Image (cartoon, rainbow, N blue to C red):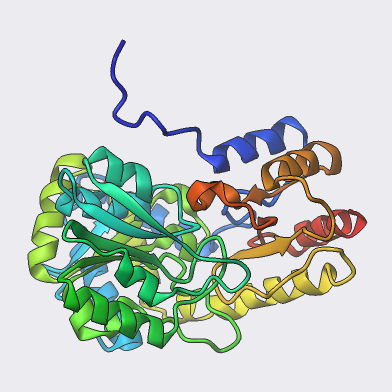
Length: 379
């Protein structure tokens, strides 16, 4: 039999719970996708780009106008300059950007620090290239990083640290102090950083998104990955991008060129035009905060314990006062008996540590959130 390069890889929890939701006709708050439509203006722009004949290969690094607009956006929001020609690449979603960055720098025996609970694509990609994942467990309910613990886990083999802010699944933000500590550690031990910032435009309560781009020493050794699918409610388009200094981006593009070469042409044209109106992304925090607040108001009477999410479109619900079941068993039962699908969060933790918390996605219509609250309040 063939030897597996990923012997421990299981089905994605998102796919498993979405299938279970479909099988049991349950309301699906599990997978992180909006159940409302993309802006018709953006859809019209894609149609127009197709009509205008933009249907052949885009340039390998991406449509130049789109890269220029991303550069302007990054400069406006984070006062950081990325050269559209050499430091920005358009990717087939953020997951491809993450894969490509890891592929470009991780060699056999390299160690990579990740923070768990972690998005499920980091570890298998590290493993695929012969690297070793060193998980640092963030603890409920605050999910704050202990930077001394990080430093204690650095060895001569450590090459990369992966962070995710705003953080999925906890909804917690890295503070300015966190980013300064990260910069300090990366500099001291000469490490690369991969900053997964796919929820960059979904930040609540007047908080600030501290991008790795804001900190010059950190930016000089970082790949930053981002997602248009998350930002513009069209996860099925699989469009994202990566920012990195020229030397790192040159290595990134070598891998990118031989995996996807280039990504969807008409969509790049459309997004380039759509981004010219900053309100299209600057208004997202208010839009999603209204959904978060509505949802939290609706479940005030439930037995779930809640700390409001600081960013992303996810909310953690603590069920420790409802049940002592494992979160996996609890979510299965909720899906089958209560007809609501959520995500057990232990699957993202080191050693599957169970904090009795499930993750729900509130990127849903108000009607769906009301239905969900009615179910949750009855539990």
